[in-house]
Image 1: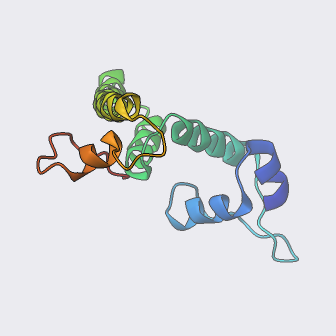
Image 2 (image 1 turned 180 degrees about the vertical axis):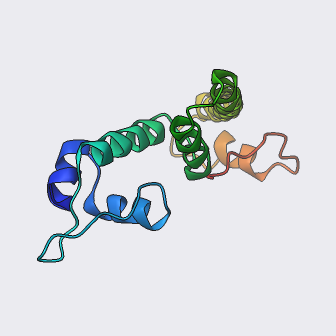
Length: 139
């Protein structure tokens, strides 16, 4: 199957598939006589694996490690579990940060009269000297 068919079958874009190939997550696809990439069942299985891993938030570095473990018949499941446990801990920390952000914003929002007057608890909250809440940064 060609790259567009592989993209449809996996829910990925052709660009993502090419990028995963460039990053070494999938082997370079053999080419047809016309120069098109050709994907087989094993390639689709690996692309599904990558798609699922991305859907649950694993980074490309983590996916590289998961694929390495998946390819290693001598692996131990404790390695996979440890990697996943660390990922769950990171997600939990992000959720806690988001909940703190929501609580702060909600308190400012609730305190704001939202009328025609100039007084605004939201702006007052943003202007405070102390920023006590962690900032969630994109990875």
